[in-house]
Image (cartoon, rainbow, N blue to C red; front, side, top):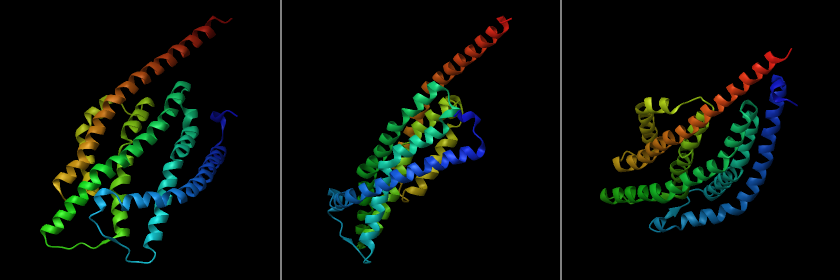
Length: 259
């Protein structure tokens, strides 16, 4: 069936089918997360920079809460390629055939960047945060009693957003290939983008200049990288539009030649 001729109800039925596929895979991801969650939690709680911390469970259900949260996060990471593919499959009929192939290739890069953002935050940002807060507590004569639930809450708060922030190059490249944004637009609005990134960093980072910069500088670099990448995508977009126009003009000329 030609998707261009689908009715609104048929589009909703297609969307429902794709959501159901995602749910099926998500259930499978939860089962896998059930086996991977414990080793991941053990690794995090016994990492080098956590050796100086004494993590406590203040409620009986705290370990269970962390376990379930880790299962869900692992499941979403595992299933994210399926989610992105189903999203791509739903919107791909609106793209040119070449754009369909190119945007499909973004999916593994998106997963790679998401995991890269998590690792960057976990191995660089979070250890510095721990070191800073522990040093600040010592200077103030405060003995910290850290709850395991609060520890993982802070960990998720600082790592997961970076996974999404690292999607910026892929997102802007995708929007450029669709002609929604241009490198010129990104350059012209650079100062506004920087301001937004500073606000985002302020919401995530604690009120410490160095930590704030550790959050902001990577995001600014990602934005600048996105501008460079979008130039490549925009050139390909223009070539695709020119090719499509030439094909349409060629078809019009052929129609005129027909008796």
